[in-house]
Length: 459
Image: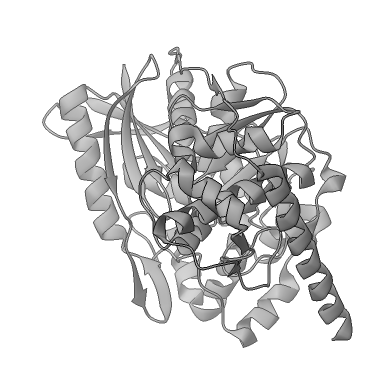
């Protein structure tokens, strides 16, 4: 049996064909397009659907795929009737107008209920729902169902509308993790009746014919991407662990952290795993920040450039994107002007130092697994292992932990084994002066914190 996994990321969308032995047999990639329409930035859903449908059809015809599973980025919802969207899907990277934000933000539940901090833009998608409802109430009235982004694609490809707890519980303002139920916001706005029945991630929710095969292909209920990565490793019985899932976002999940340790002002929150359990989390937009700092660098980063940057004390200070543990400050470079290779090195060092800080804030002292595209070549994981010699570090056998976890959920839902490769031990790097570089960076960050607090008090 083979399964196709559509992994819809904010920056890149991918299709992988998985065999039961965990190997990736084929892959396709595209970039979703976002466009302006009626005052909003929205997804070009038709173009992405055409790509996805063609990619799945090719996978069915070339690899005998028997099921289609979806993994999707967070912060995104869809309004649908029986046949189509009632409004295009909103881009989560846009802020409501000030006068609307002032009204809708008063209706957001307290952190103690949802464990969703009040984040900018659409990072809490309940906030974007309130915005769209105010601007276009007819779209809400016409919608039979409100579904999460992965569930939209499962439905669009032939499944029935369903809800899924890892996605609803992803800092949306819509879920109360301790009660394992919808939040007070859902009932206050009258949305509960538009929320479809729950199905576990991976459950078969329909079937569809693709291509000339004539066979029915199972459509599986989708999953939140970082939670899929967490599931990929937890299912392997590795014991207590922290998962660092990297992509456009760096998401650090430590199920062993106490809920009381979460600081709402540092983008710390509760995610919810595929079985409804709370997962303390901290995150920042690391992939986006890497691209900004590095000037869009692609490919390997020379080790020599990293050592040069450390020796020259060239640093990136947060933040280069909204959200994260140190929000509301402009990112900047300090030290001499770096060349192109050094800029990429500064960017990767920045991501490593931010993850190192996040691991402290999320009280991680267990095994750490580093997963995802920012760990190409293992360099990021190696630097983290050097910075934290008291912790064991592992890295995914592939860079696609989210897709691997999604595949496992699909195979297991139909009673099939799935033998993903176990993560590999990480070899710590040996850069001279890295610990001192980290200490200097933290001192400068702490100085920025104190300045920000003083400025806040002055207001």
